[in-house]
Length: 250
Ligand code: PEP
Image (cartoon, rainbow, N blue to C red; front, side, top):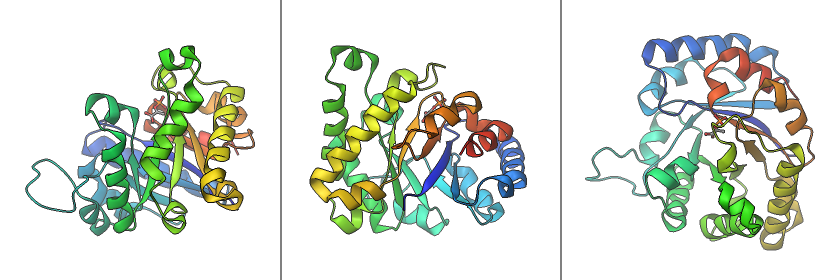
């Protein structure tokens, strides 16, 4: 049975006061979402400690990144073991902003995935194509290659801990959402790709989130796609009302 997840990515937003207000509002409404939907909130690192203390039942803690090293002289980095010690459950890896602005490569992401899994963090592994790549027509191959390079070294047991997030770069923060047909096409292709490597049962059980300008007005249609199992939400996760409304769209 696939897990349905609605995960918020706060990115580099909200000071402590605003973060406390947002998480308090989210928790205040979390009982109203369907019991089979898991919420994940992924604040900037300094918020992790107090957010963890406020979480209840179906709300879990995510980080937005982790180091590819377990410890040591890497100023400014945060390792998976440190995140684990703060009670972090999930870690977003391979977000297009990390790939673009911090030159994260597939090889480095594969190492980060290993670090996350060694600390019992579940990776939310992002993949997606740019507009130019979509227009060039070979976007399915491009995105499945990101999965092969970042994840296919994992054992089946390790792979079963992974959550995928398909995030077309042209839809992130732009207000332009993939149509449900475009999302379903890619999610189906990803599941087929995974089935070839890990078998049908693994592919069927894998949670694949859609991300890219998902909001209350389009979540229901996207989540109705047979291969879409929830969303990775950026901008709309910064308003409790919108985030909860998205989670209620199942
Ligand atoms: C994201 O950055 O993961 C994202 C989906 O952003 P937005 O919802 O703002 O498009």
